[in-house]
Image (cartoon, rainbow, N blue to C red):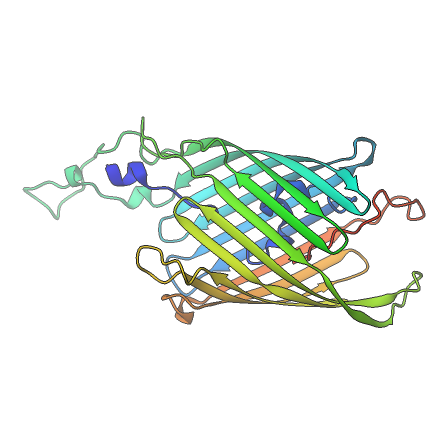
Length: 334
């Protein structure tokens, strides 16, 4: 029983973390100063029974009269081996502060309803369900663990912040600050650990490309953006280090995930090499695909991980109106 009392689940993750902005940090709600919709899908380790499948959809917009952003996020995650299903419905609020010329800070807040249930519970057999006189006979009804198998409903509070200029950004988040109890056992205690994240990067211009074929009379952008994303939840830590090459409208990404200098339970903390390609179109449409080449002990026979992201930023209602902000958020779209 102590095993089930102390076990806990981790939050899912996306390799294209900037393509899931509300999942990464509630401060991104309304950050485009426009309405935005998006979906993300990740299939991790399809070559194993212990695979993970994650889907999320979001919408956010900017309320100009209040200088604030609001957003909504729905995430569904299924763990293949354990059959653990998690559904997360979140609402977010952010506020944009101009702290200096060309420099902004956005605090963000998030409230989430989380429902979890164990899909494999009906296949479990406990000791008192086996008849010693007829071990291969019919399975007896059992009640070893009171409440086990019933869905768990949680309420989680999270917060974050995002500082940025036209070329640099630094963000941080603390998810599940109230650490709700997620135990499947009646009167059991298994708090969902707080998840911390620090994400930063710098956009480096690489000159300019050909003239755009639109009314702006500007040149296609060329840039390299190195990024870092560190996250920790309970005893687990990971670090994403890499960068994006932006050759408008095409984006290429390459980064490494792991902490090789800090083993976990005497095992090498290496995860994957991530390769990404995407399109960022002037119409507001963004499409990305990434593949995780597994470098952990699971190896590439695990199938790696496939991830697809699609988002669309709606055009402004009044294109000729002056911008609310004199700085464009430099974060990648993928």
